[in-house]
Image 1 (tube, each protein chain N blue to C red):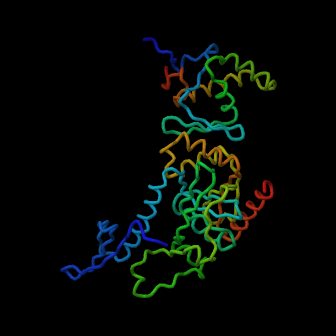
Image 2 (tube, chains in turn brown, green):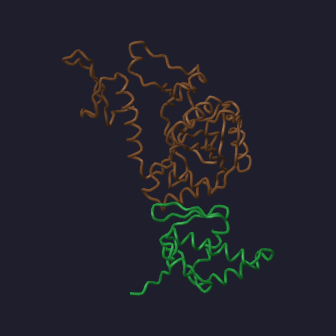
Amino acid sequence: AGDAEHVYTISRRSGDDGVEHFTLALDGAELETTTDPARPLSLLIWHVNRSVIEHSDHLLLLHASGATLGDAAVVMPGDMEVGKTTLVTALVRAGLSYLSDEVVAIDPDTLRLRAFPRAMSLDPGSWPLFPELEPHVPAELARHLPNQWQVPPAAIRADAAIDSAHARLVVFPRYEVGAGVRLTELSRADALLTVAQCAFNFHSAPERNLALLGDVLRDCRCFTLLSDDLAAAVDAIVGLLRATTEERP
Amino acid sequence: MRTDRIAIADLGDDFAPRRRPEVTSVELDGEGVLYYGETIHRLDALATVLWNCFDGTVTIGELVEDLGTVYPDEPSTNIRAGIYECVRTLGRDDLLANVRPDPGD
């Protein structure tokens, strides 16, 4: 609520050739003009994400999804297309709270994870897994949407989003056909190496960030997860989270 | 001016490796992770023990003796080889203040 600091606008005009041109602007300054009707909204989403990252440099930003069981969080770092969004969407549907599907931030002052609870961006390959989450879009707007479902956490549960949590579990997911569910525990040192490589801004303050990751991971168990069974993967992660909270309430 | 960094090929039992003070390190469950020169380095448990010993006063020969008492069933040749390999690796990665990071002869 309240006045926005910045305003994005998408405008449409017909060119002399009769072709429609779409322009995305920020605070009145053009960002891009295109003839692709879906491009402006895609670019807007990307631009907002990038701006959040650029203006949050005091935090350590992990390319990761995250969910919580109470105050205990599972962080799932990884590159694009490993299944971070699919997995976190399934976890939230199973009753966990939502941190993010893209960026999980570590606060160096509190060592807690801070949320970036943007809408979950589900790719077409995941749509059959979540038919109940299909957005209902008026036909005249459909062509302007990127080929992703944008699912706000409130679409799953009104109180799904959470502000922060304590990291207790790190899981590096990878979808692999035929894997079933294969969990392999990693040493915390090995996990730190991989998490650092998944951080957007590790090198902006590397000495601080190395120590920060060490402090956070000391409280975590760390695993790789190979899976082609989403329900079983969710059960495995929830089971591990419950175990970590029972070890140290 | 004479350099105080020796070539890897010139390492000997009387050499006392010294950690670069600029290296940032964390240790998790006895395993080390180092940061220097925009690179993150991972140390196994033995390398981490050795890294912590590399203060410029303890020689390789002394470390061979010390580790020999900790691992009495391990042949000293193996212990010596492991220490030298660790020093060479850390030296090549420019993590030691008194070892030149070139392979030498």
